[in-house]
Amino acid sequence: MSAMITHELKAKITDIFMQQASVKNFFMFEQIPADKLQNARNSFAPSIAADEAIIFLYDDTVFGSANDGFLLTTKHLFHKNIAEPRGGVALAQVGSITVKHGFLSTTITVHAGINELKLTVTQAENRRQKDALFQVLNHTVELLKNTRAHTTDANRPARSGNCQNCGAVCTDHSHRCEYCDSLL
Image (cartoon, rainbow, N blue to C red):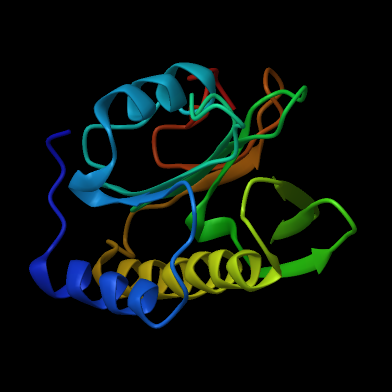
């Protein structure tokens, strides 16, 4: 990955994680195992752009393959729940993130305009870990959105909408889907 993340931003994100309990199957920055990252990219995050840095990966599989879970970059959140199609959203589209605990799993909902991404968390060991995962995701997305707001070129018009091919919510300066590369 050729994208760079500043030392200051990396330290802030690490601090967010350190304030929470450790979470099983959660990997940050260069600690993401290469095989898990490759599996996640093949399964649900195939279109990471060269200018995006990978922040973290949560592996929600029983045997540790990382074929299900979610991956956060500096610009997108990609995910795949078990037995469901992959999805993703540009961080610029994220309005809020909420959590709901169920009996066997927890659902983290990412609200993006009229769309919602539902991230299912089944492999965290307890509710405290599930809450920690939610907090890390929520605070990191807010930090990245605020950082991006200060560095984005406001003079470039963006086009946004739902991709007719994959259904992703996209904001793209080139008028192409950020996930499947179809025209918007």
